Length: 162
Image (cartoon, one colour):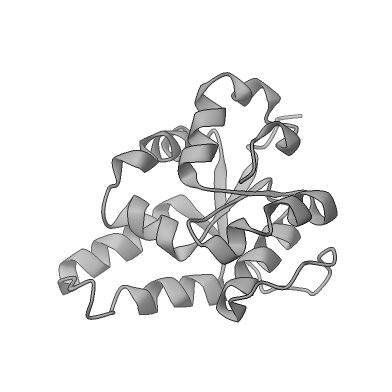
């Protein structure tokens, strides 16, 4: 039987860093996704938020840049069916708009939710204990993944939490 790559969920800010700004802090993540070493997953509500954020005036993205960002997301992130409500009990995020990322991570069996959002990052220990996934920044994830923790990827507890 072929082992499937571990799953992760990327919040909208991480998607911006990865697919719009080509942030060098996400280089390790980009490479792992490119190689298929990990699988990024999402769901329709998260993708809808992603598309809405790309139109924000603060970003000042040209239509062609928005289109490239959407295509990059669609090429690297697998869209899953709608939530079933069968996820483990999850903590409530202070920012209700971010709760959907917790639900997707839990229902997808993701090992990681990558975020820069402090409200989500504060929940990392609880989600690890209660739902089996860690919430990390891309830098935390890349550091652990690239310093030999790849061999421990079966155990999300081996990744440092904030």
